[in-house]
Length: 304
Image (cartoon, rainbow, N blue to C red; front, side, top):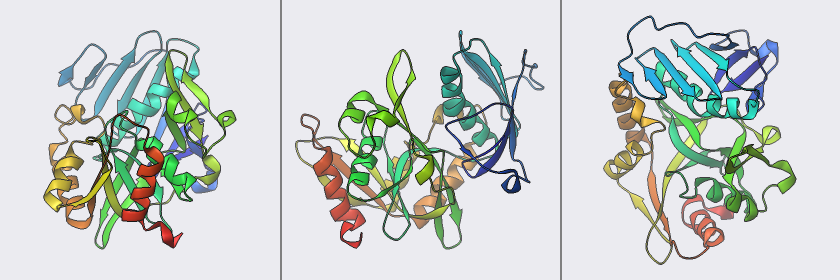
């Protein structure tokens, strides 16, 4: 089976339901493979970092989830999975969130912790924030206003001569239960619990998914602060600093020797992109108003 994820073509021995399947005719040049194994091979080079559940160097990354699976990512072109259970939703959860991210780093690609929508011109706006700040909820509320979901949780940004382009991850929204219950963009029947012991749900949107890189209109950082909604445009320097704080799995960068790739990415994006800060109050449910203010002040929703 063949899939497209982060703009890369994956050849997989197993079904990867969160990813977008593509026909063989579109998969003539495979970027990486996914294989099941009974045992993982040893490292070719000694790991630079050894932690309880992971060990890695610049081109080898092993990630272990007790009683779920072990993953070995190699050279940016191979992911080996050793299942330790039959709970495939859990096995694929860590594949999607960690193994794919390690593969991107090995290819000198820096993933960002963002959700995003497409505006009336077909350009992407990315919302950057730490977990539980409201990235997915903001995107879902903007979908209720007529915008199209572009990505959820992670994306790549490609720096080109005339500007930056956003590259989506895969067509699955991951939302906490309270987010799911406070949105009308998707039916609750479309959602499924990602893992039995986690109150988080997946919402597939394969039919709406747009796989091609699109021009990046801007990045909006989200914060919970103060007692009212506020929106302001940031300087390039401020944007670069906040963007550096929203790199996905940034704790791996030093051990994988990706400091130079990180620096080039941040400086390149900040030179070609506009940044905004949008804050909402903590003590009241303001997501609908928050999304409307973002649409009015940043996205120009009157163009829809």
